[in-house]
Length: 174
Image 1 (cartoon, rainbow, N blue to C red):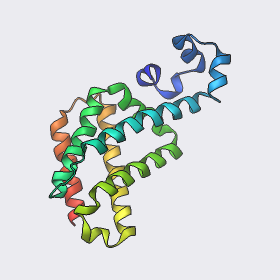
Image 2: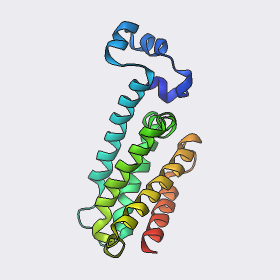
Image 3: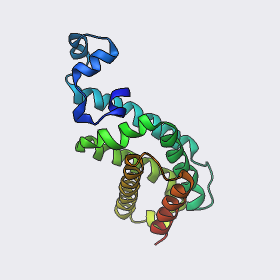
């Protein structure tokens, strides 16, 4: 994680990983097919950690979309700010692997879709539209977060959470 968080994906070699981890290349290749396989495992682990935390922050009984979204988005942004290395793995280096990125967006959309479903009954009536709307929201949130992480998270987190929550609520209500 340390190497991929500090440098671009293309600038990290298997030799760099082996040197930092103090293992031989043979040991590395006993566990991973290549550098991409390592990043995929790392990404799955880090993204799983993030999704688990977001799900845990979801209110059990929210009375509004804002009430449901705000704690989840606040957890997302807070965790990224507190763990910039993990943020870089999720939003900067791993997205270079487009198939994995698309899978992650679907995982996140499924999570948010399940957690928000009770608060959007009218939208949920059209299942295809609901799924597409949630996927579009998650993809948009991801792009905003990529930009935020890329710029070293210089903007404060609270206004970012406010903007993301407002955006999501307005789209889900329309």
